[in-house]
Structures are given as C-alpha cells and as structure tokens.
Image 1 (cartoon, rainbow, N blue to C red):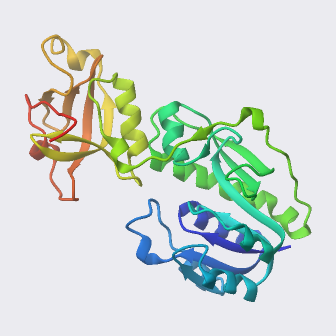
Image 2 (image 1 turned 90 degrees about the vertical axis):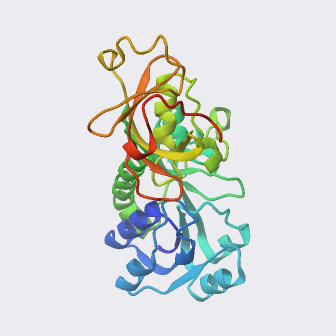
Image 3 (image 1 turned 135 degrees about the vertical axis):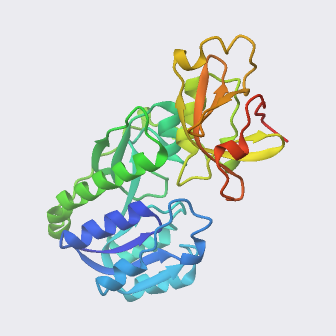
Length: 312
C-alpha cells in the first residue's frame, strides 16, 4: 500500500521520516503553512523533508479547505496518515484513501482521548504511549493499529516527553513498514468502557497558585513548559514566565517557612535561582523570563521578600 500524509508538528516530521525510510511509497505530503509557526505549539514544517524526498507538497491553513481535497484527488493513496494535527479531518477526505485513514495520539488509548494529552499526562501522572489508530468520525476512538508505551520520568518537562514519544513513534512506524507495504494491518477495537477524555487547555491555565503543594506547582511548570506557552506568575505587577524549577530540600528551607506566606520569595542565590514558598514547602525557580520574551535574568525579575501573586 501507499500513503498520503498530513501533519504540522514534530511528531508529524518523525512519522513521515520513518515512513520514507521504511520504504513506504508516499504519494503526496500536506503540511500546515509556515506562517502558523507562532500560533501552533511544537510546529514543524514538512516542506523540506518532502522536497528532499521529491514528493508533491501542499501547504494549507485548514484541512477542510477545497485545495486539500483537490490535492488528494490528484494524488490518490491507499492510506491517509494524519499525524500531529489538532484540526479534525472531515469524513469526506477519507474517500480519497482507499483503505482508510490513520491517526496518532500520545496516550494509552482508550484512556486520555482529547486535547493537550502531553500536558495532561504530566499533570495527572498518567501513562504515555504511541497509539496509532484508524480514523473514524469520533476523535481518537478508532480501532488500534499499533500501540507501545512511552516511559514518563519523574522530572519530565513537556519537551522531554515529546522528544521521547517521537523516538518511539519512529521505531513503531519502522516496525510497521513491512505490514504497511503488504497491506496486512491489524484492527483492534478500543474498549469504550475504559475511555477517558482530556479537556482543552489554554495559556491561561498556566497561572501558578503558590498556595498549592510543591508537587502540584512543579507539575504545572513542567506540563506548561516548552513548546507550550509556559506557567506564569506576577511579580510586582509584572507577568513572569517560569520555565524551569526544582523542589527545594529541607536544608534549603530550614527556619524560613513559618513566617512566609505562599508565593513569598525567600531568597535569590548567587547562581540566580529564586526560592519561593509553596503551601507545604518551597520551590527553586531556575529559569524565568518576562512575558513578551525580553531577556532578563532571575535576579532582574524576582527579588527577595517580594510575594508572587496570581494577578496584577
């Protein structure tokens, strides 16, 4: 069998690269237009990879636009691979794929269907996976084509988990390549009784509540971090993005907690790390930036004795 390919992010690039290296014939590639790089987290252009492999390429803004259907009609395929695209694929596009469409989700389906799966995996301590499934008119609900668990480490940030998931995705696709070429692909129905769903997340969900336990704040910082907009707080009315952090030890906080309120900056050390009080301890802020991207070190943003807040 051959395949047409649609994608927009780093997982799309990893999967397409593996399909090509696995000897799967690709009829055409459709990638989200490069102008969307600033509004799509983890964006990765597919144009260069398509050009390198001498494959027909079409940039698009919405997968449902007429040009997409016309392109797929021009380059028909047995399979339509839609990998790393947050837009829903209109059912009419699947008519251009004789054997159906294949999607990807980084959770152990049927658990974790829905939006922002990487962030929710870290926030909730859930399992991660590479799940390839057959596309239907219901998001993430089709029969499983292949599934392999991805390790989640205790201090993973979103970018760490995305990178590891992409590596496993590449391995899974390479292993599948002979079956794709032969047309012998499995279909294992999902157990609807075990299905769970993640809700959409927005940048506003990155707001830090310092009155939460250290572990909860740390999870939020890791989940909302790059390539996403980041967890944030306010210092003297200024919005500050917290990119990296580390839980403090008892030695770090000895004698400092009883008189400090949550959000209070207990100290800023010589290395530029800021120690911030939480509900049950403290957290070291190791990388921060002023909102808007200006390059200012922690010492220029966070001062000892200042209390971080949830608003201006």
